[in-house]
Length: 480
Ligand SMILES: [Zn+2]
Image (cartoon, rainbow, N blue to C red; front, side):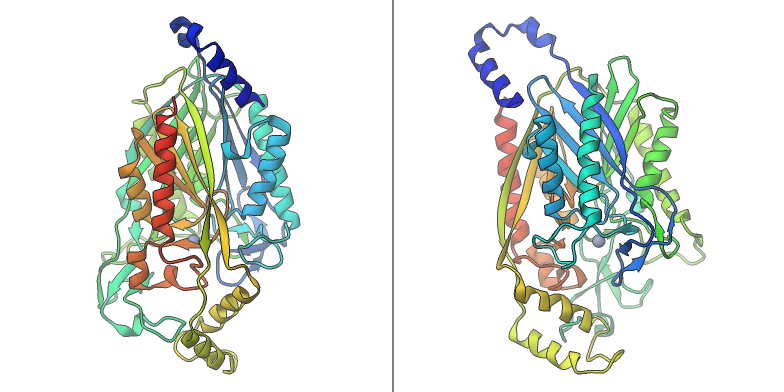
């Protein structure tokens, strides 16, 4: 194995590994965008009921970066899909390791969470290991081809990180409200918090959590300054506002396009790859729930263009200040964590039994009762627990953690605050896809993201995940 042999050699020759040899160390990088657009007719998921794709507004891509520090290689892939089921991420990693010797632990595969993409899930449409669908196999193949293509393009490179802020495009979408009428849940109970409340509702008190305005990014250039790739990270769910039936990469796609224009990389060869990864945005969206009267009305795609332009502009402003290094240490750690699946209570089961007896269109207390009844029914044939993949990556002074959930922003903020690295960020919906990850505190408030059938794993899962990731960060940070 490339990594192991080199580490062994470095150990043996450690004493004669002179300072000048260290100075000559050179980072290498390559990046490509692999087209993953699904065929028309594919099921678009993102809403509660799938709809067939009738048009491609803009193509979907798996954007891939490979970095090589001379002894360790890592690959980061950000794909324009709603989520990446673990079996598809694993299939891609298996293919990558077979052809490139980059071990699965050193490959991060994440989803942007665009809601205008085809489902890569198999026929079960739940998250425990499923038969890989035809589109899922295509996706895995395109991702592994993308990493191999990026590897083919490896060239001497330099890297640096930057930070920008865009506080105006992120809103916590969970609100404390005083009116029980907007707080009902599908289980016959009343929550304390409402997700996506009616705008300017008189009973809205305050958001139930924070936002993270930060846009962290890593910029990678050839040694002569030609841009190769930029990986940014922002904690915003998605924007939306597409035509029904459209395939689109949402604002993530526009970000790539606008950034390329702003840094004047349109003519660059090989193609410059600008990437926006999703941070921790489980409870964050782009909707101002208390807008001032007379605000702008947006046409299709207008809002996502505006958001992408604002985010790309902020990154571009910080881009000039990036300090580059010709070599940084790379590293990665991966670990599975076993999490118990929640089970419905007796009261919940009785409620659903009653609800299912009602005719179409009728409900006991909430219009989504039947949808949740059928989701929860799937737990019956499922396992008692899942093994979720946790991963941390080191790129010099920067730490990246990967979580396979739609992760609440508090979790990302906590990891940023406690990380031993100079700069850290989290990429959510990476290496798997298991629904929402609220904190135990947010579970107590209730609300959509905490509902069984939207969230599936034990209530304290986020505490266990955070503790594990911080340990992994420290282990990676110590490892020189
Ligand atoms: Zn979502």
